[in-house]
Length: 292
Image 1 (cartoon, rainbow, N blue to C red):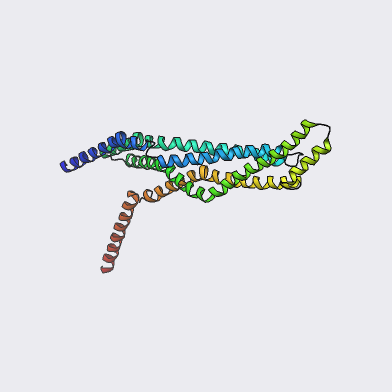
Image 2: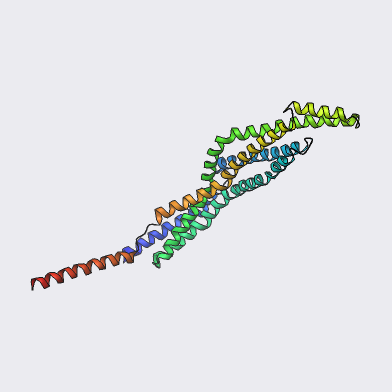
């Protein structure tokens, strides 16, 4: 009895030490921005890329809308609508930056100490519910703490593959803005000189368009091309910013279930033993009857 009590006392001391270290040491480390400096830098770099892409979509949509005629207007409207998805990506980036420090603080300030208290209760009130809840709280805290850094790391690996393509899309959008501004400036200058000389204005517009595509269909093709590239770039950012963090969280939960979720209930073990005893008694009874 004394050995059992001393064992519980040691376990209580260990749990107390873990809880105190969790609150006063690990909590400060886990919630520090210096600890997550690389992850925060990766999120900041992604935010810069998203902001550049947002400006590029807005500028390209405006530029295509200024092209004479209505041929490029539908494409300009579709490009303008893409900014909505980029706002979602920016929101996801800010959420990740907030969670990266809050989850560490919550895990080591609340979840781990509460798990220690529950396990301490289990030592004196041996109910499996307390033990299981303590384990689940600890696992949940660790999972939410590491999910953001791991997801950002995975996202960065994917983004590095497509970063050059995204940069080329932004540069192409800037080129389209410059080309359309040359066309519209030529039209404006002629209008300011004499609004009645429509023939001269038309010739200047056609000359400007010829430099980049000969006809309005050239602008339409350029609009379709940049729209497709914008969609590809935004799809990558949506996957890396929204889908991958959720996928990583589900993966860790699945792993935790595999590692800690395989239990053989004690009642099943007793049932197996009881059935074996019955079988042995039955066999002995049969042998006795046969000997008689």
